[in-house]
Image 1: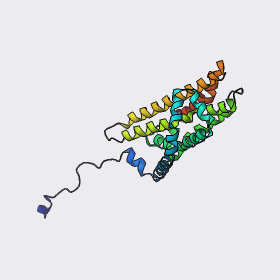
Image 2: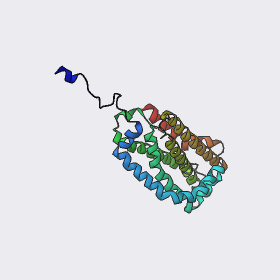
Image 3: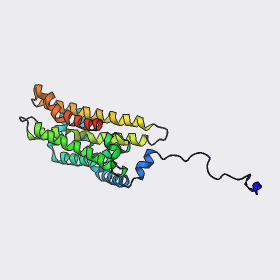
Image 4: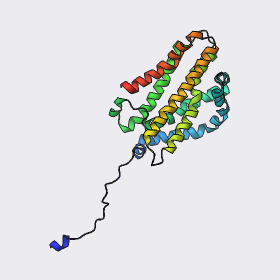
Length: 235
């Protein structure tokens, strides 16, 4: 009887089973799949409007008055607003997939709610910023200039999203470290936001804000951003 058990064949692998990466785990969540499909559909539907607006958006990078020219026409300002609101979803999905925003309280959030809560944080920032713009804009400026300041950040979101999507595709290469992508994403967001804030300052200065330009920038752009950072760092 002992001779029977002296030899045999090992059919299972001798090495441990590989652990699924964060990409596989994130994609396995049903909520993320549904939101990703919605985001892709939105991007495809809005591509014609995006291509039509590209010259106007690029002009915003080249000249500070480009934002005012875009805001002056309803045929460009309304589609720009629609693009910005629609792009919040894919933007939030990238933030969630690569853990760009991870406050301490994230440990109590189930994976199925992670992406929706990230979207909620982004929307909350947009709402807080809109509230600050409603209360603290210079009273002497015309309504169109005030709208230009309020929507100025929207002019740069399409380029930011395009760059983030490109980085996300590159990070699919298995040999790349995702922590590098995290730094790139944060750097891109800081750079685009900083450029948009600079343009807002130029718009304020061009319309007589004078010495109070920095104070208005603090109220309109710096404080809402600081509140978001405080939530991420302190909570």
